Structure formats: C-alpha cells, structure tokens
Length: 235
Image (tube, rainbow, N blue to C red; front, side, top):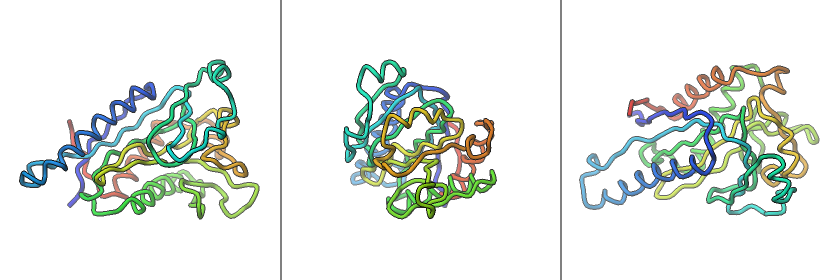
C-alpha cells in the first residue's frame, strides 16, 4: 500500500521559521506513534509531509560537524547577508540559499517499511534519476552521502546535492539541498560537508545556463513519489 503524503511548496522562507514548522509536523507524527501503544494503530496513523522550500542565505552545521568548517566570522556573515545555525541533523556544514531546492520529507519509515540507510539511498536515487532526465550523469560517492558528479575522478569530484537527516521513532526530518541555480560563491566560505578536497556544482553550471526551477521541482517531486511509492493527499 502506498504511503500517504501531503506535498507543500512554501516558496522562499526563513530557515528558522521553516525549521520550527517542520519540527511541529515531526512532533505530531512522533506523538501519534507513542499513542499507538494504547489505541488501535489505524486510529493513530497520520500522513507524512514533503516540504519544498528555498531559503535566504544560511549556513547550517550538523551535530557531528566542526565549527572549523565555517571559514568566516560573524561580521563576515552579516556582510554576506547570511545566517548561521547549529542544528540537530546528521552531517557537517552546508549552505542553503535562493535557487536551491531544499526538501524536508517528514516520513514514518515504519509505514514505508524501510530503515534509515535505505531512506537516504532512495533520496539519492530520486535526485540521480531527476538529473538523468535532465541529461546530467550523477551518482554516489563511497563514504560521502549525497549526489555527486564525476565521483571517480579525483580533483574533479563535485557535489550537486547534500543530504543530512534526523530520525526519531523512525520519523524523519531535515533532508536534502539540491543546487539548481545556486550562487556557488557562498560555498567558498565553508568546507562543504566537511570535505576540503572536493568541489560543489549546480544544475545551471553543469548545463551552462539558468534552469526553470519550477520545472525541476516537478520532475523531482515525481521521482520522490515513485521512489518511495507515495500517494499525494490534500490537506
């Protein structure tokens, strides 16, 4: 049976505001799961949510990351109109900004019937197949979560999509950041995801021109739907 999910594209939205919003949805799902001990399981089931959003310039550092991977100070952050947050996802430091599709799947993995490793694999697969439809060859990098271009070419390897997630009671939050028309200069102020020997790229850079981000969102949304066997619902 398909997993029922509400899809929301909330446009350009402040990072902290969006974090609080997804945390509220996450709390609702985990609370419902706790109630399953006392009530029939069917009465406690709640649908998942997939949020697409773009953020104003912001750097986020995962709980296992190092402050040393942020290469500028607070004053320089202000000069670049960028914010900085330490957050509770896995992974190291990354950047979010306009022109980037940030996805926050708040899914119950028990309902889907997969574990966290398979969940990350499927997120990567949805992005890889999206890029393939757009004539860009991408794949995985052993030891490096996310989606990469030329992972087998030292010195040329570059990341196009970062992934960092958190899960509790098999419910996920946080997610992925897919560079479409992203201003890549902002990555020069960090060691992306903790790597010092690998680059970053965007769909626009790979294809040589700015892309229709709404068109890319539609492809990616459908790839996620197919990869996870989802059923979209309203409200």
